Amino acid sequence: METNTTTTPTATLPQTETSRPRSYFNQGQLEDIKLAESVLDAATANAQAVADRDIDAAFLGGYSEVISEARSRSSRSLEEVSDSEQATLESNKTAANLHTALQAIQSAAKQKHKMLATDGDPETNFPTDGYLIGARLNGSRANLLQSADTLIARAKSDSLPGYKTPAQIAAVENLLEKYRDDKSAQQESNRSKEISRLTRDDLMSTLNIRRSAIQHAADALWPWSVESNRPTRKTFGLPLTRPMGM
Image (cartoon, rainbow, N blue to C red; front, side, top):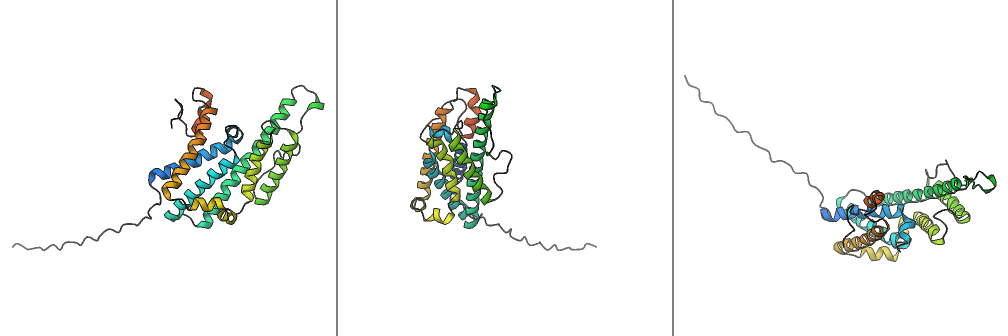
């Protein structure tokens, strides 16, 4: 005897798509912001060298503000971080740049100490006392500020390699002042207001033009034809087998 079996189809539930916030910038622009941040880090690490090509602290400060505005808009549109968290991120980055600059002063003091120790004459030795060698320079805002004041004052008085002109000292002082400035003061500045009025594409155009100017300076300072320049060229996002194009 044959039994008729009725199969009831199982209902297929529609898949729920996870909504993702739409980015303020397109993917290409996000890559430009990432490159701009890398170039800023490279220029800050080589501040004395690029200053000789007119990429001074004022230029880098304006460039940093453009990057900050772009990153802030991107973060807000993606709901990645709140405004207060973004301000913290920016402050941490400035602190890291200042810390690196202070370590460079210490390196210059150690260099001078070694150079003057070669003749074996203790009368001509250069002591590194007061340069906080081995001490922690950061760890807290107060400690970083005190370390900066101490090392900048010593660099001014001791004519260190790389810190023999007012401009070379000013590059570090500007980093210190940037760290001292609070976020509200930056937001109220005319420069910040001007940047905040730029449209998305105008902002990216400004960012890319300034980034390119820094790269052209680095392209001249560290030409591609010198093999030892390859690591530095990489940090500036420069081609390794030819000069930078437009």
